[in-house]
Image (tube, rainbow, N blue to C red; front, side, top):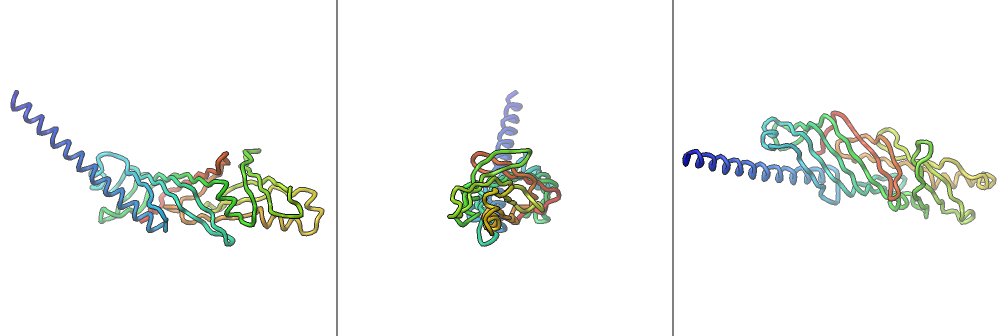
Length: 233
């Protein structure tokens, strides 16, 4: 019995050491992956990276990770001389293949993500004193209120729809222009010059494709996904 207890004690100690070693290895790998993503995406902040699955070292030997999650901030898109800031982006990469050196990542079988953009950042991106705010959902469309900056029509407010196009662009369009504006020559073109925008988000990790937009009270939420995506870094 004494020998058996000694053997069990040794097994427990070895198991603990293996677990500790595995966790140390995964933490180092997460830090390295975060640095690579920051560098490849040109971010101003290092993202949070979490490698799922246990044990990690066994996954490394097989050169395939179950899941890698990333939380990014500081992504910006430029269009028409204005930048659109993405407040946060969460992405989940599944069935991730490692490179032959075991330290780089090649691709993921599938990926999902969600980007959040505040109305303050949309307003800033629109420029010219335009204000964008929440307007809810109507007939399956995600809508916002747009207040153009036109001194002649200071009280003008239009409803606009936010959509995604081509898998990489956030599009804002005024649904219509009020009749009082149509009666003024050149008014409609001036309004649409302030309300209609396209922002191309071409810096998403793994080239995730934008799918749909939902307007929330504190901003817009954009769902994204991809298959056989190339991993950053």
